[in-house]
Image (cartoon, rainbow, N blue to C red; front, side, top):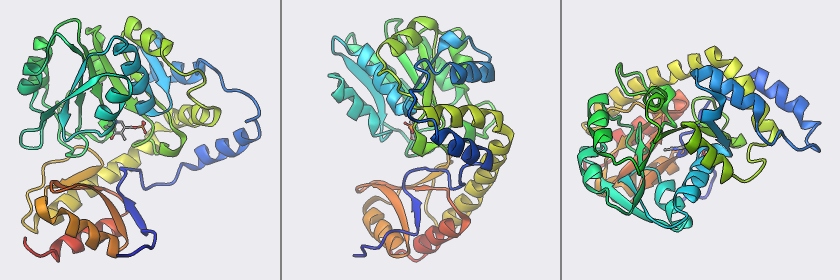
Length: 333
Ligand SMILES: *Cc1c(COP(=O)(O)O)cnc(C)c1O
């Protein structure tokens, strides 16, 4: 066992690039103003997001990360209890927040590392309040096709709120993959979650949002803790939207690196599902712990699901190369 701090963190799907110089500059100058409260309604940010997606500002609800927004959404939706249907393995926050809000989590196993939307539709009951589709899915990186999503949405009753968690949407390169913002336009019972944590590289500031029709967005806002978006997060997110071209060039670098690493890892013989996110899923089964330990010894931390597999963020090329080396040397391939 080593206790040294890993040189590379590939366990949290963070963006390996440091904040843009324009973002760092505004953060330094804003730091002198933090004796003041932020804008309680995050007005500038809300307007910037609305303009970016061509939606009315009333359709936006912001919060401390998209996890913060999801918490508020579930808090509102589960006021009288109820069930939340979601895939599994998927984002750990779904069962956690559901239980925190007094609801019951209903996990539906993935099929071939993908959402089994037919089984998820079968799992809806008269107790279901919310169904969450994580697209791309964390931790497997897979996306749901538009055809499968359409079939699924036809089966969801009107009193169930559909949440499309698109934390990794900016990394999707597959043509024709569903875009939640477009889906939301004519679906009043569908909310999309987006975040500045991943593609925009602002995980440490905590800022995310939901896009949903006014009644749903208003319920989320009403259930929100006041001043959830702090002043630095607000300003950095606005500046990041203005610098989107620069940030998306980095995202393109990361998706190219994703392909390079996928090819190299697959060369070891391991079947790795196609990822449309900024991480890869290594279905290592009972070799998972040995792999994670060997990565840690080599200075890289990864995220694991015991006995199932490891999720590895696409990070710095040097770090990714260490992962390839460790997997190539792992016994039992
Ligand atoms: C990282 C992640 C988020 C984003 O969380 P923030 O609170 O915005 O940092 C949301 N959903 C999924 C599935 C994620 O992996």
